[in-house]
Image 1 (cartoon, rainbow, N blue to C red):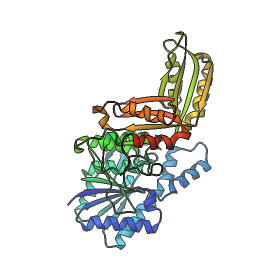
Image 2 (cartoon, helix red, strand yellow):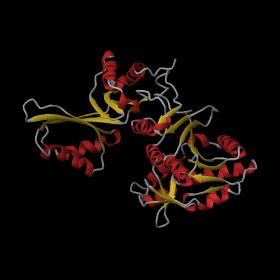
Image 3 (cartoon, rainbow, N blue to C red):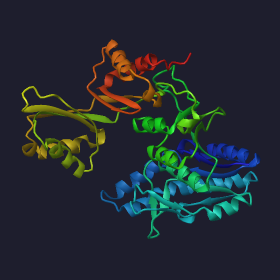
Image 4 (spheres, rainbow, N blue to C red):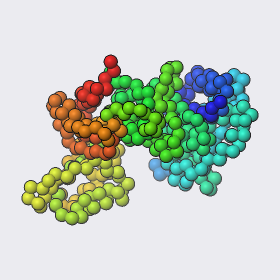
Amino acid sequence: MARIVMKFGGTSVADLDRIANVAQRVKREVDSGNEVAVVVSAMAGETNRLVNLCETASNLFDLREYDVVVSTGEQVTVGLLAITLQSMGVSARSWLGWQIPLCTDMAHGSARIQSIDTQDMIRRFGEGQVAVVAGFQGVDPQGRITTLGRGGSDTSAVALAAALKADRCDIYTDVDGVYTTDPRIVARARKLDKITYEEMLEMASQGAKVLQTRSVELAMKEGVRVQVLSSFKDTPGTLVVDEDEIVEQEMVSGIAYSRDEAKITLREVPDRPGIAASIFGPLTDASINVDMIVQNISATGEKTDLTFTVNKTDLNRAVEVLRSQSQTIGYSDLLADRDVVKVSVIGVGMRSHAGVAQTMFKALADKGINIQVISTSEIKVSVLVAEEYTELALRSLHTAYGLDAA
């Protein structure tokens, strides 16, 4: 007998037929003798509808009341799934975040989990009952409902699996696993049997939408075995595991991309100590995250160009902040470019293989793709290129690293 947490996203519970499909999968695990907790999201599109209601009601809404509204989507799905399971003869009850309780801090709209009391849930497992848990929500120290931010149901599931000491956390989505790259763009992309926590974290943070970044961080920290599976096909998925579980490391495991980047270039910035602080300090104060940074070598030692990226949604605010600091910084011109994409090559095998970056640069050069910015980490090389080359870059790199399916 195993203890399993099963998580189903919005597309998996989009209507009553799909909820019945989820219930059949849960019943199959129960009939196998397993203890099961199910974490569900709101029905597809429901959270967006609730967010829009809040924004229509007021431009400056109270985040505590926002959490009350947007958390109701999950309340509907846990109730419906529990009812459906009961109709199939499976003992089940629904749990909202405050009923467990799943305790969070007071950062409404993007709360972080602090503790989960699983004592009553485990007792009910012993009675053969399935726990149907609302993802995305918790309760703060003052007893107010909180939400964990978009995609937070993944985090709820992994955190619950850690608290329950579950054998596995199965994340059911509309894809059947983690691929070497986006199969909608690269037809020869391969599904991976296993991927390390570190690789999955890089994939998620660099644009892959399979798992939410915070959930992968938590799984790595707590050692939770995560499996990504399809809600609609009975096929093996992808296990996200510790590096020790993968015997032979590939040099590169996957290629991710993000269209969410925008590029800013400051021309002829004074080349003196403290200039970077005068640029990035005000951006930090405005809660604008900066990602890739490159500074050109100054020919005269007096002026230099500085290029960096921000999220596209922050571009207008970033430009406004920098223009307000133009006298302090002393740049001659500010250039903003939305038409860029970040492409990242990821693999823990990079630690023991030389020439990964060179392969990337040559493959792009052979296709006439100019690299605008480069950044690296121990298991990742990222480049910024013109958005029009997204598909060509992904396909050429996928081939260059030998990732194409046979």
